[in-house]
Amino acid sequence: MSLQISPKLSRLLALTILVALVVGLINLVALPLMERFETAESRLADAAAWRARLSASLEHIPQLEETLQQTREAAGSRRGILHVENEALGSAELQKMVQKLISDAGIQSRSIQPMPARREHDAMQLGIRISASGDEPAMVNLLESVQKHEPSLAVSNLNVSASTYRGEIPSGPTQVDMQMVLEVLAVANSK
Image (cartoon, rainbow, N blue to C red; front, side):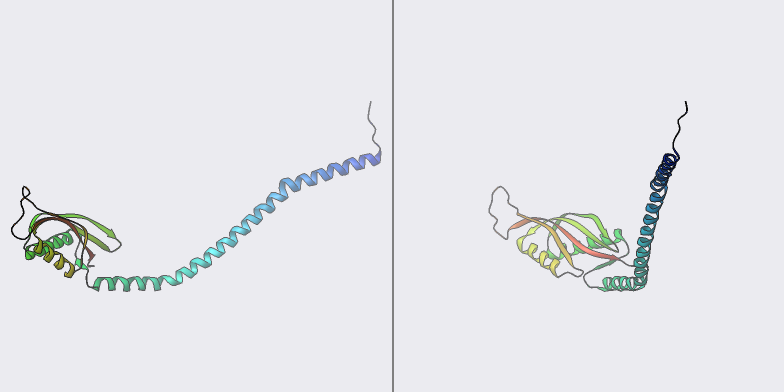
């Protein structure tokens, strides 16, 4: 038993199969290719925009390097900054300065401890923790000396307490105990 299809129906069936194949090829091949092409075109446009931005940035690099060099030179010559060879020598120099300030003020130091340096780019912040005792006018002299000192010293922490012995009222100037942290901005000299 064979099935006979009329010529018109046969052509219509062939045309339907052909249309289905064309639509399938378009969906499976042509549309993904067009999507990839559009994505690649968009990426190329983005890359061209980035290239233009980077080229513009490259033109500014010499000017920025010159500004950076001028800023470094200005910072190195600025008053109030300690010029040191390295961090260890800077801490030792700061300790020597502080010991001189303490002895000039007539205060007895209990302890002087260097603190870890904090670095930022070419500058470092050196610190020193001090524990001392003396009379009140000597402490005021010390703080005034710190305020006027060159290079500039900053007091980042200050604790002062009166020294009393068994509740006795002192006959002379009040004796005080003091703990403070002094900091200085330092720049390492370039060799």
